[in-house]
Image (cartoon, rainbow, N blue to C red; front, side, top):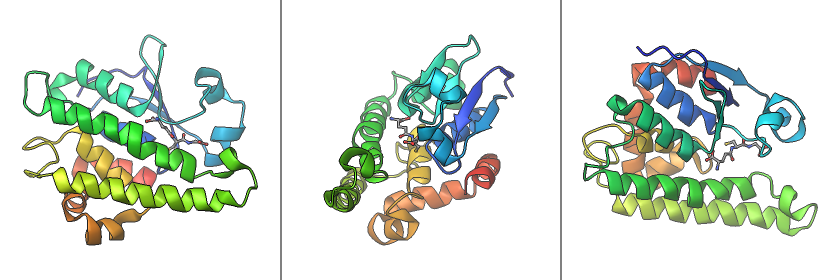
Length: 211
Ligand SMILES: N[C@@H](CCC(=O)N[C@@H](CS)C(=O)NCC(=O)O)C(=O)O
């Protein structure tokens, strides 16, 4: 168990902050969680808005007080600081390139479909197209998950024999639209990874906080 009590994670129930909670819990580092209500995130001018103008979670305050946002950046930072966790494969491994490719694809291609589809009114106001934007981003996301499914060869984890942060992203994101039953029926390899992680004891507190 590592002690680093000065880290503070801004989080919201069920959000992308759970991906970072899972990593911190597996690493075993002590950190403070500050949960915000969903309507506090975008609207309020509280502490989160002061440190992250995007008003998004995850936002991590590092031990030296600097602010780290963006789940992939946090993942890479944690991987460098706690390499023994294996959550980010070392650059010397064959897993590193597929890991990097998949990590950036998750945050740069898949995650934005939620940014636009969850709140279409932020982009289109009360225009009638707002509903269509949500439907279109939901459909695009399904196609992307199927692309990943086609190139995955879990053994048993997404990147091979070792659990990595990719498995945590998949497990948590598979609770979001189109949700678990769709993955069971359409992406059985992603679903199997998620089911395996559901039962991991180190993640039980994270699930209790987030489901
Ligand atoms: N690119 C960011 C996306 C973060 C993000 O979109 N977070 C969502 C929660 S899953 C959020 O904070 N939404 C609040 C809002 O938009 O009101 C990352 O990978 O961390």
